[in-house]
Image (tube, rainbow, N blue to C red; front, side, top):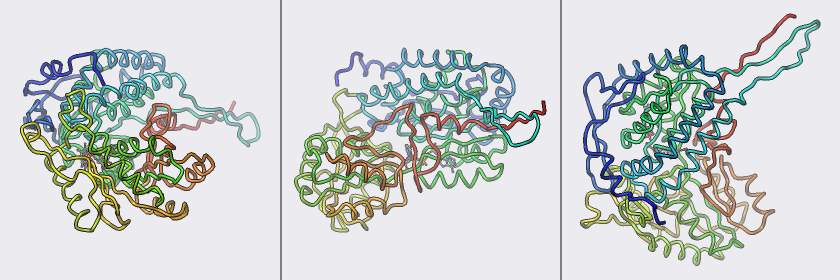
Length: 497
Ligand code: NAD
């Protein structure tokens, strides 16, 4: 991809290692304790900035600000005014898209070609929900009471929303939670990941510039175990919308029980990709490879279990391994980088552990499998795109979410067998099917238990199409009209006329 701007120059201008305050009630503030944490560039290890390490008291202050805005000025905004505001935010995002993309690339490593390409998904979300802001309505329902009694429903904003996001797509994850909140008239406290807190702070600046009233959007930087946990249990938060790991999702659901706040959870996965005998191999190989290697496997929908019809298994997996070896690994800020670093040394160790377990359990390492070293790589956490063949269903690499660049390929013989094996996982986030037989594709679509199923493609996500998981991949949907309902209460009204 050729960029039409100088990403490295912009990167140099963006962060200087200095302090970046968080955003509560329209004010830029430090943590009440004065504590800070460092935000790194995972490609180089360089400290980009320090940010406040919020404690429970900071979260409480944000909830007070969000409640005040919800009951006060924000409640006076008409749907049309919220729509105009969202459209203004979208325009500001468009004007600042290069900065937002560079910031994401610097703080979490995703190649700039990918962060730039997320534009439609993010700005489209703002405009999609701007459109929906004026389309929220209840319905008049004929009831069975005798006489003149009218009954109808109203859709009302749920209130103060706590949004907790992971580090792997900060701009998209922030907007996918903030846009529906603004469309419905809710207020938000967003807690970014401690591993990538910087772009949400830039987003807060754009919200302020657009004229979002104080307290409507608050960004609180801090640890999950402290700030996240306080938000999840807070008695005056009405809803938590969470994206992250299944274990954290379970902890949040437990913490939310105290005031029975609503919860929606976008969690992890171990998604199957099924390559049928009649698949278009040339087309499917790069898609199957990038279903995992995009963002070094650090994507929730990574299609990391690659089931290939036995007749074409060796040829197909060989080609995926060749493709893996052809990918350029480097710093995300270089425009020709295909694969960036892992987010942290901790995550790199986890992935190395999985690679060793694959080898010791007898899988066939066909590509990658090593950590890169040398002047370009020593500051960061780079693992080569890895392909294992001959994987068995009970191996750790076939069962657990790795969140790294590792494909586990396995042959299958019959459709019934592959359906059973594909579904034999606690997760149910996504799946891919490659076949030229449309009837077979429909049959598989019906039988695979996953929130998104792609046929002869992968990865497509759109503001108008619901996205989310089944089973241990969570509940609730983001995108589309279903997402809006998660931010709304239904009130039934009865009138004796
Ligand atoms: P994580 O669960 O460790 O952290 C996610 C967020 O939760 C962070 O902001 C963290 O600070 C916070 N958190 C941690 N403990 C908490 C607690 N006890 N209470 C409240 N908040 C807490 O996940 P991660 O490592 O940042 O991201 C990787 C995981 O996210 C993977 O499992 C991946 O599959 C998943 N993910 C899912 C989707 C999706 O849409 N389904 C998208 C991206 C990532």
